[in-house]
Length: 142
Image (cartoon, rainbow, N blue to C red; front, side, top):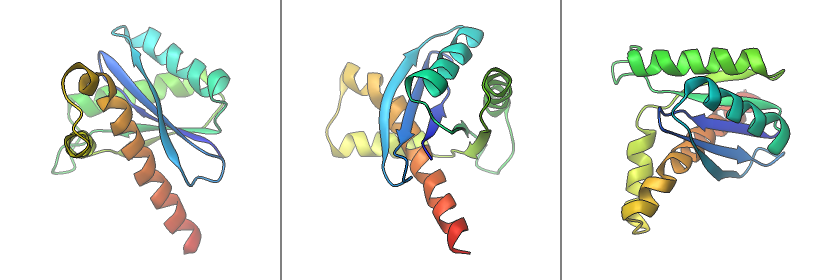
C-alpha cells in the first residue's frame, strides 16, 4: 500500500511517499502554507488526488520525556482535521529527533543555505516514513 508521511510545520510541511511494496520511501515535496486549514486541504489533495495513497502518517513531535507539548497538540489537531477530510486512515507517529536526523544527513551530503531550508522538511518526512515502514515490517514478522 502507498503511504504518505507528513512533517507538519506552521510555515512548511514536508511530504514523503513510499511505493506500493512499502520498501522505498521518497521525499515528494514541501507545502509552503501558513494557514492551518489551507494546509490541511493541500495535504488532503496530495494524499487522495496527486499521490493516491491508502494511508497517511502524521509526525507527532513528542518531548524527549514522551510528554505531549503545544507543538505535538497542533499536530494532533492537524491529523484530526485531515482525517475529517479524507476517507483514509490517518495515524500519528512519534517523530522525536527526525529534524536532527535530517540535519545530520544534509550535513553529510553538504547541502547548505536556502536549498537546505527548502528540503529539510521533506527529508524529515522521509525519515518519519522510513521509521513507520520499519515498524510495519516488524509487526508482520511477529
